[in-house]
Length: 329
Image (tube, rainbow, N blue to C red; front, top):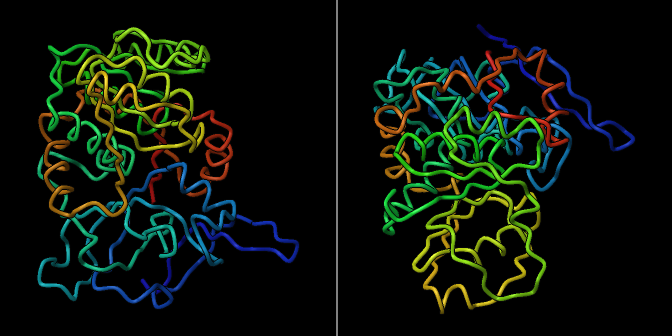
């Protein structure tokens, strides 16, 4: 094929942005060592921002978003990959300033590409996608720093979102007592179904008392929202508790003190999935294909085509997405 379909975001004269499905030429893709025929992608919050003209994500338009892609190698200039290899790409610059997975082909550097691990199908890899990889990075960091199921409860904020959902499912698979936080009325049933033992409202983790410490409840935390919710959880950690942070949907500000860290020995780790080490990625993708893989992963999934993407983009921007939206190319 010399042309392919893609979701294309263009900027209008009045500085608004339009989403259209267009025919693109493969020769117009960026020069890359590996040409991949995309089978599946997934919708992330960053994709929705790119699709609506957010310059903090994508500098130049027109553009095709999609920070995740799984498919088959069509051409390769790298000895590491051969035509027909099943592969996946998440993060790096894909879908940000490089044409992404919302197109039927991508052209990328070989160092971005990972062979699909045995035990994981292309669609399953995109149910995980960047969200699942980010959750896995958070959990792996917590495990490396001593968190075990015997230590106590693990709280997950933004638990019905992409990263939160995957964190709840993986932690439950590993035997942890998971507490999910959600502000959605329909979120409680969903979270209990996917493995959470308890569900609390946002208000229950939004302390405004001004106290430097609260009762120590949690041994671990995966935080996707930041702001005062993260500050409240830090004050609610047990001695030697561990916290992995990966989002700021609530706020980038952190109104806290040093007391949780110096009086309870709490540790907090920042997680970035877009540029993390490729060997760490490979290790975690193998885990996700085997003992970290939830048995009911398909249950949290809605699959759409390119035509269905604009509706789902609006929904995720309004905070209405629950679970994962997969794009079949």
